[in-house]
View 1 (cartoon, one colour):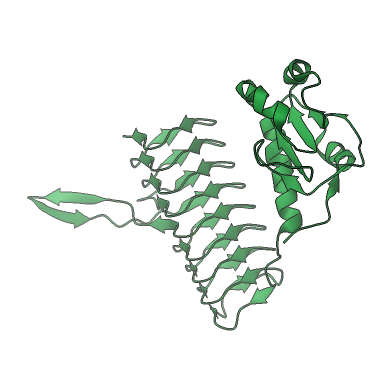
View 2 (cartoon, rainbow, N blue to C red; view 1 turned 90 degrees about the horizontal axis):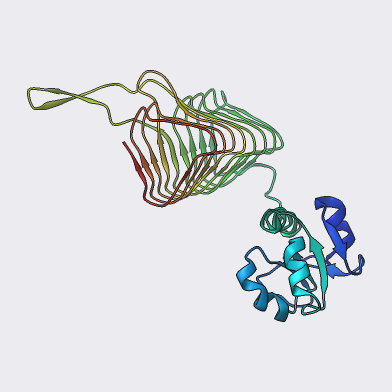
Length: 282
């Protein structure tokens, strides 16, 4: 889906920066330096790509003051000067994606199975084959994708989206504006067993998973419920695909983990930490 375009003046009004060029120029989205044409904005966040920026056909280039001075007249289009071009790009890309997005249908699909003892906001969108069990509370504007399973007593706060085939186990709590991708499992049992003369005795996992606001969880990522206390994922945490978070972990606000990270049970990780792909925390 496309839209008619946004004036550069509107972008600057919305996201700031210094515009050099015609504020009435229209752009329909963001594109890479190499692919952009006169319909697109693009950005330069790595000064090593200045030569590529000079030859881009984009209508506008988002860049720092230093790169603006170095490019001189090499690029003839408009410019938006920003201290953080990559952040500017991210916010502008969100804006253009929202303009082009197709709103999900409101209400509950006829094939969904929703307990009469669940509470689902009228503004929520519940897709085909979703299961919502008793005592669950689904907030305003929540989107639950096809085939997802929401356990007993789960709480999902406003504006959160679950993509297809997400499973939320009983009594877990999901905050506002979260984005949970397909195959994610929230609240499965932690790996808790006691060894009795070579035989493993299962320890019941009776805690929950508590997820704060603005958390992103990638495809096929698993977050185990606590054994006794809760597993806690604080606000703004970003988890990539295929990550394992063990039981009773505490992940501090705005920490980010790349794909295939594994975190052993009871680990405590602070705020604003970053983990590269396949890092292991014991």
